[in-house]
Length: 73
Image (cartoon, rainbow, N blue to C red; front, side):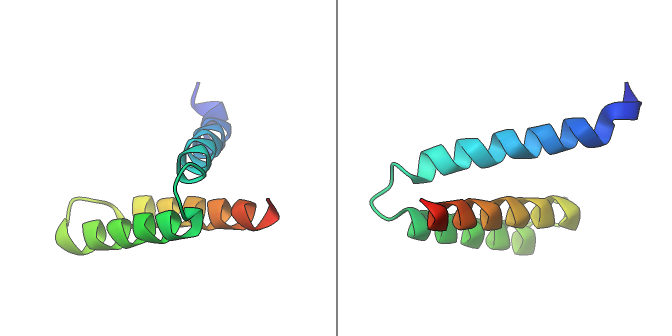
């Protein structure tokens, strides 16, 4: 089961990316919605010591991919 852990993590990241993309596309300004989400993650990282920086980094990577996909559309 742990042999395919990287594939599972990648699939989960792709799912989260798609969910965020679909959500922000419904906003008046999708790019502003992504920027607001990134700001929220930054605040979370600064306010809480129990959130691993790896999780913040993964979230930022996902938001960057969402921003790129918005540019494609």
